[in-house]
Image (cartoon, rainbow, N blue to C red; front, side, top):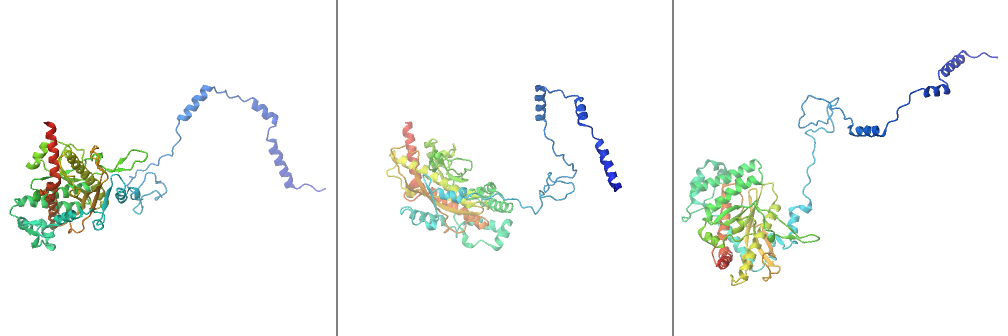
Length: 469
């Protein structure tokens, strides 16, 4: 019989010693029965404990204190311990997402297209492609207006009294060094009584305002204030002869009756409204117009809701954008303003005819007004006229005009209309002078005032006198 190996004996002893270290099941049960039992928690105590547990906020990640200042290119959420960079760090190479451009459904071009299907519609046509859509009675009058606005834009658009002042003024030396004023640009008119110093101050305001706005990339409001306002005041000073006033209508609304509406579906029609920046009014201070206004006694003769301009005869619409502005948006705003203005005038004309104030039905060929868009230094001209009305029922209330309106332009046959140079400032001023001459023309056959607006307003004034007697 072989004796057991020493290693086996040692192993057996260790196992026996380990087993003796455990108590028997009976001893374990007895020890457990001798332990004090926990007191059963009452329902009220349980509820109180649950409420406290709900009120206790979860523990937060401890803030890592850092005495170093946070720069615009850093984030407080970036860990500063053991790391110098992070995926959330902002560096010069970080590319931020740019806001996507306007959706196609809200772009100015799409909105201009939608004007064709609203009621009443507004059509915006390029002038070169408008031959087929312009009525035969309107086309020659638009051509005559084009010729009138083009007059003296290339020759004879600077008063001769300004020649010496312009050539001596140090402000214009750099501008005139490489772009001198041609001799044919000056004209003599002894009938014009203008103060050369005052005119030169206005020219300075426009020229320097243009340079300032371009250099500092100013917004639309700055261009209106520093460039367009002094430019129009210059034109009124030179060519207005006290007949017109500049009106800022940026904050004024259009009466809903003269707006186009989106076709009703499940809901009422939705008017399409946009504001414009400027227009001209026939001045209350000019004696012939003042007497007419006095007779009208604040009758509503324009398409706005403002107390003053509602009772003023308005002409044209001018929309301004900065150089970074959208030309199509300017066209949209100008078109809506011009359409509402012509519809109001059409309403007045048909009302005067219905009341016996006009011997003949209104001639829509005389309802032609120029409109202007300005984007930065560039001025563009458009022609607005009444298309054939849908149905004009004089037995109905004429407060709702249903006339479609067409806008043609811009007129590319005109020379460059840009206020970046001295010549440009005075050329554009001459354009607005031609526009005012058209608006004030008293010719009973072709004049805007004489053939159209004056007979209508005088008929309304006569009606006011009759009602008050």
